[in-house]
Length: 76
Image (cartoon, rainbow, N blue to C red; front, side, top):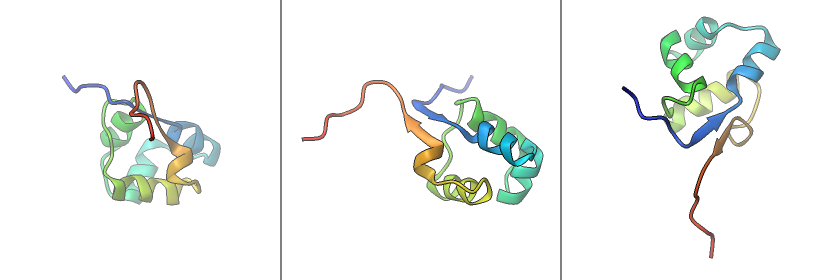
């Protein structure tokens, strides 16, 4: 079983707003629909390259799509 990540995302909201399916997004970024499903569900953290491609397709920034959750290191 895959370990959940500390990375949450709003990909689904952006994708639905654009009216595209997981399969259509997957095709545009070159991965499987299952990969998009796992990312949206927080079961898989995408590479930086894939995150950037997804952001381009859904017309957003990486920073607005992804958020780190939980205990984070403090900036000093």
